[in-house]
Image 1 (tube, rainbow, N blue to C red):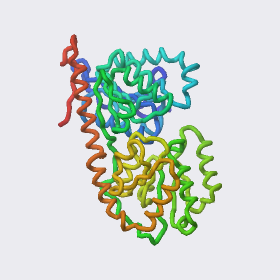
Image 2 (image 1 turned 45 degrees about the vertical axis):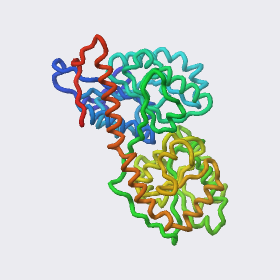
Image 3 (image 1 turned 45 degrees about the horizontal axis):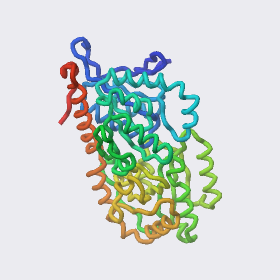
Image 4 (image 1 turned 90 degrees about the vertical axis):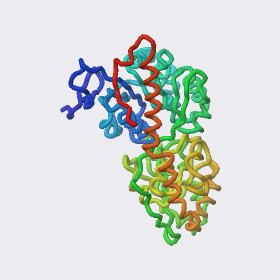
Length: 418
């Protein structure tokens, strides 16, 4: 049975266009396409949905088509803003799939490029979330005035060389989510680039600090289970602490692995092997993590490799939960060390253990971090701040695309809200 408002069309799924005007003959709408490689509700997915919402708010009468590789939890937060949602194969450069892309999947690339080029041709603006959607980055070279690529990752090794070269070769305008991300990719010589911090939804006000040192410190680590996030570093740090201090810490590890039950199982087994079952709970990914933020006293982001920004650290400050983060990548731009949270060297369990000990023993020393972190969030990382920046960049890009030679600027219409 088909669900309401969902119509299968040639292998895709399209959702009823709730923003379409009744008389299409009288009014040709501005067309915007938004491309994303994910379908869950992790940081990259939420950032994409927030950008789509910003474009809808800025251009309320535009036809906004969202392209995803498949359905998933992200649909719920996209549906209010998209004219339709389409499922199509995307040629995505993932580190673990490079061999397959270079062999079996290579035959699929020409069709993917044709599909991307056609959408660029037919739209006034194509917004692509993340640098790893290779078919759209390659096709952007042919129509760079219509393409806007939003980069949310700091790749490493061979993948970094490929993605940096691809982004520059595309000649599309680039949005970076931090100065660290822009430094990793470098400024393009033939296009414009911008730094726009992700706008993150948060509660209306910060939660009050309740930790006074008389009960265990509640530590939250929220994120994917992978080689980057540092769950093992936190476990090693806690395991190394004296028994008396160890008993004064409770930890929640919340999250799952991308299509890998084995990683999730291995982490749960590691907790038991290290003798931390009494202190550490492993919990599955949850689409709304607010209950975990409210439970926590602090939030830790012990990343082993560079984070392009650090959405969890931003959310932590929004909830009034000081973040303890690795001093790497964009995390140092999010957290002001000694004012809104703490920095520790990356992949350094002894340093992390020492900082946790300070936090446990001296709660009064960081009581002011709650208000300072909330203020930093509202000033730099709230949704309205980011939405205004995305809307301004898109409006400027559309002005350029629609005024190109041979095309009347009056053929399509859209409004930009002040």
